[in-house]
Length: 137
Image (cartoon, rainbow, N blue to C red; front, side):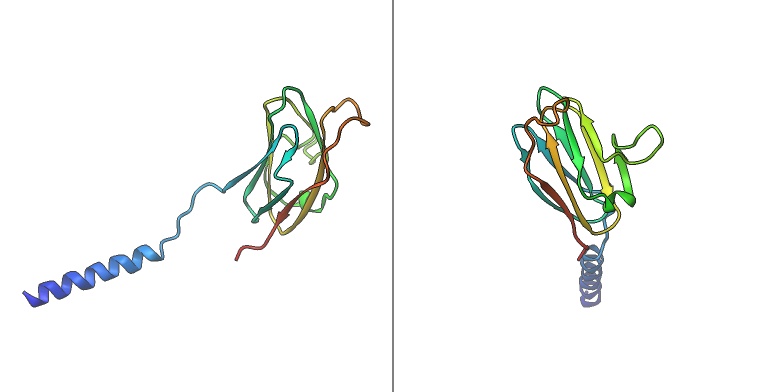
């Protein structure tokens, strides 16, 4: 009887240790930036591989302009940001209710502005916002 009890305890301990070290893999985390009357949040932190999604919650189109483009050279995913020739565009119009997204492959900062009236370059513009990609750790 004692050996059976000992065997059960050892078995339970092995199951617990095994569960504690299990690595879950799934789709990358999505971090959303919402464009409405303002850009929220105006500072986003993420890790390489996570998806950053800009969603236009306004009733009209907006234009996003990337000021720093170094991070655009190494993307893990992209939606709505490439030109007809397959290059990443640094000035993108997002229609009302639509979104664009990027997954960055390395650490760094992406600074950008949003023009709330895309056809009017002197129209209302957001303060410069930042996506900061930090090392995993």
